[in-house]
Image (cartoon, rainbow, N blue to C red):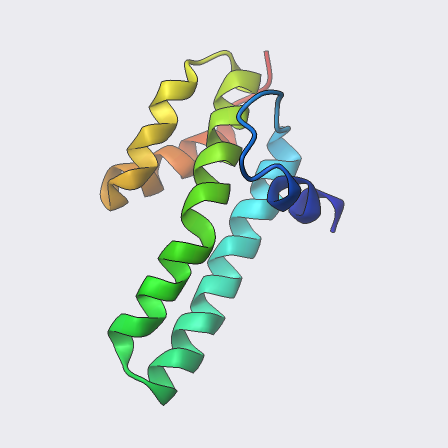
Length: 102
């Protein structure tokens, strides 16, 4: 729970670091909550609204958490901008889950 709250409370902060464990927990939280929100809103309003709500809720926290994770792994934080492009962003987020700290 601390990992999730830590990432959400630092959603506008790219300074500092995010550990591998905290990033994995936050990444799984985002996946699960996005699936639940998308499914619930899809059943009520239709598919596209659920996707947009998830994008607005989690884009900034995920980019900043990825930037802090990349810094912890010894890479440039600018790579976090790849999160804005869905195929490359998902691959980058999975790679960030696997990178060891430096």
